[in-house]
Length: 194
Image (cartoon, rainbow, N blue to C red; front, side, top):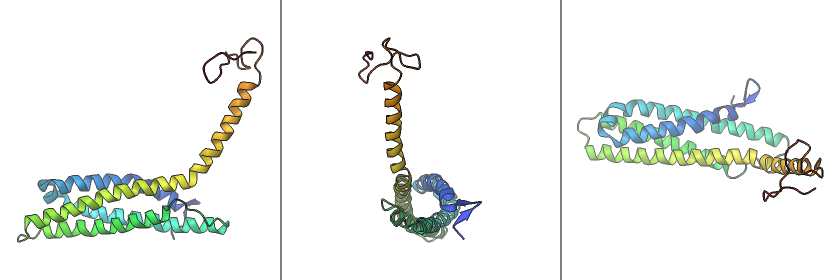
């Protein structure tokens, strides 16, 4: 169910939404929780949005597990690397707590006999959970990108360096010009001798 969409892994598609929408929602949640007038007016809608972000985090995590199964099918037991899966799981739990405490803050805030200090305390917990969600999204997203792209960048850097070395070394004539018609210089900026 969470494997592919139109031939592409769902995890790759929804992770882009996750790394953008959860931090934006978390920042809005923090702002709303820190101002009493905003909290009274907007805690209900932002709690609902936090529930949607919980669903998004769950779908991303579940799709990631299906994506991992595809790597296993090719004998790759090391993907994902860098605790990416553990961080994604932790993020989902934080989003569950954030959604529940947001809803609790909204529900208790509507009660007339609720002490304002209790609602403010819950709002503080919501803000702390929202901040935690931002940190976990950054860490999870970074480890996911690193897991996939770090080796590629490292190997392509080596290939690019080889190509530059071959281009710089080849075609240099006694006139100090490269085959492309520009003056060749070494790394220090000194013109290349021919």
